Amino acid sequence: MVKSFGEFLLFIQSMLFRKERFSVLWNRTVDECIIIGVNSIFIVAIVSAFIGAVTCVQIAYNLTNPLIPKSTIGYMVREMTILELAPTITSIVLAGKVGSSIAGGLGTMRITEQVSALEVMGINSASYLVLPRIVAAMLMFPLLVILAMSLSIIGGYLAGSLTGALSAQEYVEGIRTDFIPYNIVFALIKSVVFAFLVSAIAAFKGFFTSGGALEVGAASTDAVNNSIIAILVADFALAAILL
Amino acid sequence: MIEVHNVQKSFDGNQVLRGINCTFETGKCNLLLGGSGTGKSVLLQCIVGLMKPDIGSITFDGTVFTNNKVDIKQEIRRKIGMLFQGSALFDSMTVAENVEFPLKMLMTEMSREERLDRVEFCLKRVGLENAGTKMPSEISGGMKKRVGIARAIAPNCTYLFCDEPNSGLDPLTSIKIDELIHEITHEYGITTVVVTHDMNSVIEIGDHIIFLYKGQKLWDGNKDEILNAKVPELKEFIFSSSLVRAAKKVDDETHGGLAAATTDEAINI
Image (cartoon, rainbow over all chains, first blue to last red; front, side):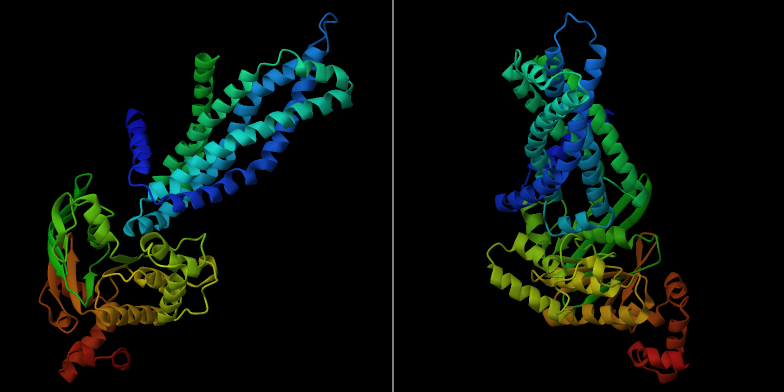
């Protein structure tokens, strides 16, 4: 465990040492932003809209006390979405989609000697292949989290209105009650940290794959498992430190 | 010229290279010959810097590569072209983009037009002038090897390394790839090192042959000398091929060098 962590730190260092030209890294980063960000919009939109809807319906189901105003449902949907569901669940979903893609892609490049081909040419393969992926993830995750927050709240609004759990007016009133802008900042900080963890862990697992197709699959699975655990640990640590 | 001095390499206590000393000559096809597991590919990886030898040094035209400063190693690496066993083409790029890649990354002073001209020239040189827009997944194994060669020579490499260039190819395509490597070596006067266990390659392109056995160099010479070598391990290796046995018979009958014994003659015997 300690050895792996040490190797991980050395891997991160090797990426930053002897970097490729800025223009090359910039072009690679833009390409990765499309792969990581734009190609993930659909799954993030679906997951977040339904999570918002389900959260709204389930809170309404549990909130039976007539003394508590129904607008509380909107308030709770907003707080849960912004503080926890949007950054954490979105990052876990992206750990599965983006993390496995990064680990699988790099693992395949490693076993088919494409990484060796770069190194023989004198190109820092970690810098060329990994750095743009990590930067792109750190740029795209916050944007996807903002999208997830918006769609979750809209999902809750539609679910509440369509099921008759509360009126649209009550939901909007709840959404606007006691809003703390810092919560958004906190969620975005979390998303950047989660992005780094997902992309760096997946790249580390994929980059050092050896063997064949079976090992590439195993590296992808390890990448997703380790990323999810890292997200949950970091989630707790950030909440304890920043709230 | 590439000089290898006392290179040793172990993996988990298993010594794979046991003090290799050899020289790869400029303007020649230098073959690293040997059976599976004799350390050919490990030696090649040590030479190109993908592995670090435990002991020993490697020198490129008088400049020490092993344990030298990063800048000097980079400078040498930029003169290296390599054809990998599986071609190692970047599968997200077209054939032309693969060939252009080292130019884009290493020769920043070249304009886009110059790069495209060079790509066109290299693809034409390997006989693939019409395959530039194809993806690696759309071309055959032999074509992939040709693209690999084009990519290796694109930045005017001084040293060309080929790791089992014939693996997975049919005999006819293998001969064509061998001929291409041989022609390019002599045309550009580069130092070529080919890792192989294919006796056809030895007969076709073996200007200088180094035979490895259990991590040691047992013999070196050329294709005309190899059939008369006295090393028992080498004799066992080369005469395990019925084609070579036939060629040897022709060689004895014609009293000529191995070059006189063409594949056709050997087959007729």
